[in-house]
Image (tube, rainbow, N blue to C red; front, side, top):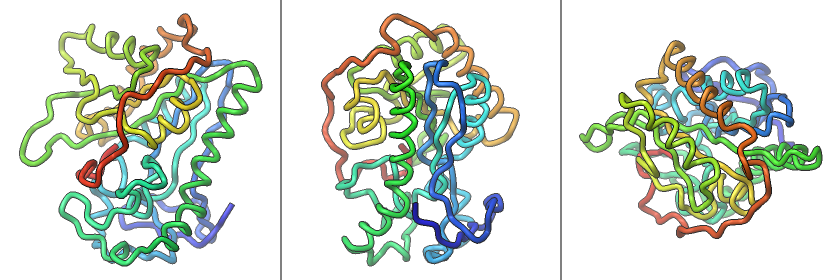
Length: 288
């Protein structure tokens, strides 16, 4: 695994080891739980060699750099379930792990109105370098966690934690939570139904984004391997602070515990993907 010095983006938590940059973190847990939690956009950190990519400090506090609140929800959810988790430790502004390797938005030059000077002249060689040093180690850690669970006889249901902005282009998004999925209904549909049982919640079914995108994390690790899965989107104003993070991690844990051991949930079953790859104008708000 490549290890380089780390730059701690302004406002980000201090790195555990200022002399080394680790592109992912694996949280130990029991494969017998039948769950694996992943978080693609947990961090707004950058390796020291990339400085601040030419951006002012406040851009690293925005959703373009990471999914606000998602890391804390992931940690709490993993604790509540006793399940393993894998999180990225680099900003999506460096390279986005929730993109296919050939995706035109893999390295963003413009994200929600912010020009990223450090990405302006990124060529194929630099993309390959970032892919090898940061993107692939994260995905290899997810693959290793899946392989470990399957080898132990417990194919995992995968839950991916993300967050989305309350407003987009002047329009308020009504959903507190959205569940993204492709064609495998085993986990996503019962999760949607469980949250919709609360009349006070507005629950998105493939809102505010589509889960039918080839090459993304759930496609690579769940769809192609026949593992049940759901990508959870939480509205950022609800999980920006610790009380909301604990509340929503608890809500998710309660729903997932109620579904644990459901028929077929932890079996390998293949479903065809129902969607195309991502276009160059998709994901412009820096989410999903």
